[in-house]
Image (cartoon, rainbow, N blue to C red; front, side):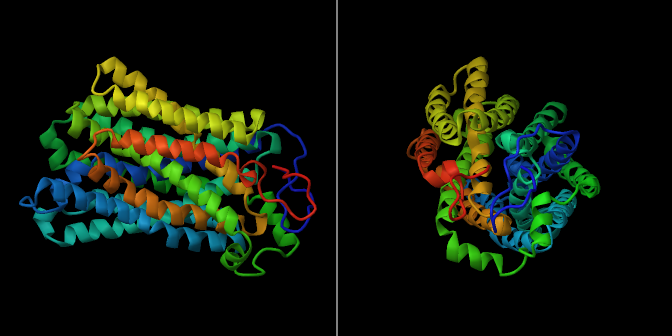
Amino acid sequence: MTSQTLPQGATPSAAPRALTRGDYKTLGLSALGGTLEFYDFVVFVFFANVIGSLFFPATMPDWLRQLQTLGIFAAGYLARPLGGILIAHYGDILGRKKMFTLSIFLMAVPTLVIGLLPTYASIGIAAPLLLLLMRVLQGAAIGGEMPGAWVFVAEHAPARHYGFAIGALTSGITGGIFLGSIIGVWLNSTYSTAEIHDWAWRIPFILGGAFGLVSVYLRRFLHETPVFKELQARKQAGRELPLKTILREHRAACVLVALMTWVLSTAVVVVVLFTPTYLQKVFHIAPTAALRANALATITLTIGCVFWGWLSDRMGTRFAMVLGWLGMSVTSYVFYLSLPGTDASLLWSYALVGFFVGSISLLPVVGVRAFPAAVRFTGLSFAYNMAYAVFGGLTPMLVSVWQQTDIMAPAHYVAAMGILGAALGFWPLASRGWQPRGALHNPI
């Protein structure tokens, strides 16, 4: 996208140009920070069983301990709307870059603290309470990070590479899940169960916090987006409370982004985050095998994010949404119905569904252009985080309860969301985006 003069509130122009070295620098630094920040957020779930045994009483029933651990995980999602709305509010008023840097700092510090927290055996009930507080702070930070990253990169990218740039950024964010998987495989391969339980579980949190602080430093080399500079020049930034404008004029866009977030959160939480524990508990697959397959699926997911973003540039957003999310529905059944299977079938079927889960990159492709530039950060952040707080937080518990009566519950849920995502592709707002009055098309 470029920064030429536009109608009030319009999105940037579509003057064709190639990706420059500056574009790649912006994309690389943004994706690196997103990788580290998302790693910090999701690594918790990869060690949920160990954390549950250390931060809750040993006399507590296993199912209740797991439920309370998942509840602390969900608390991070519930904190996302407040953090996301506040960070986005100032992002629309003060600038994208400042809030983009602040969000990763607010993630790195709590992650480091989690790695240093005393356990229940040392400080009693204070241990889970402090863990809960850190998760709330993490949730608030990531609530601003992901929408901020999407907007920041979208407003820098040339129009003809818009989907590719957002897909590449999203692949960097999902790379954080891959990094967590790799650390999980490494820990389980290097240390005994007793060593992980005693002290090694702290390693991924300490590393994540330290590298997160490094990425705070790296983001100082980024530049403010040309779109926000234009808004400031035309004095369109901060004229009215952004959330007030969103709720009055852009409710349809909020609904669209919320429904797409339901699809995204289901794909990420169920297929990527929930399934490693599901494989171990339901099908008694060894932790190392489950995490190895998860790591491979995350690689194909990361590749898929780039592919589906690129496809939206070439074939249109509607085509990419229908193909990507219907494919996710079909391959989810291929994967879950093949369990436990063999080591080989576990790897290839998990990798296949992971590739189609990569179509989650279509949410920001649609979401960024669903709102005008002056309130874009707030609109995307509000709709995305409010929906994720509900669906992302409740999904693990819903699937956990559902699978007690039907072990195919994850497949049914993911498939249903894939069908919903494909149907949303036929909503004109999804394929064309927000349009100022009199516009014949959306420039991005």
